[in-house]
Image (cartoon, rainbow, N blue to C red):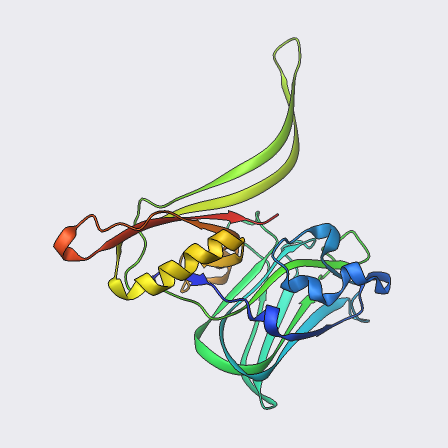
Length: 265
């Protein structure tokens, strides 16, 4: 098990983005939507895909970038969809991966998460998604994506960290006491408790505080070494909030704080 990881710099925001054809060519469904923080499915990257029903987007930078984590999420696809990731530098492939949206439990978020064994330098990243018949609509929707580096604290999070879920529901109770539940939305969250952060982590902790204030998304990966279905099930991409930073152990110089990551809908 590796230390938890945070993707704090979505390099898609600084990239030149191209992609497969947008739904009816409408600008509100353009490929640029994958670089936003909101992840609104009504304004996502909706693509009709190519002849193989594969949607793709490509990020290009004028200078090589260090990338290690890749995320495609808030999709309208099922878990049978597949993803291919290709990172290149000066035309040469430096990293390639293929996986699916399958989660550990067979249910859960329609997303794919991949962490390379080590950072790679790339000037182009191509991500292709094949729905494999798992969408009822005539388009493939990708509302959120992340490509960039990860930060891992010197020591891992506490076992007191928790996960949970907020739900939007309409509940009608009949005269006999029966409850009829109409689900609206589900939003996962994690409260990450760190009791033994190092002084070397403090500059990044201050950076996270500013990111929290601006509403920037982060990618939280509880265990980057986990198998792909576990990564897909447990990783969260959304807004982060950081608690106060304290030094409860005095001379031991162990910094303590909490992070709350709320999935973006």
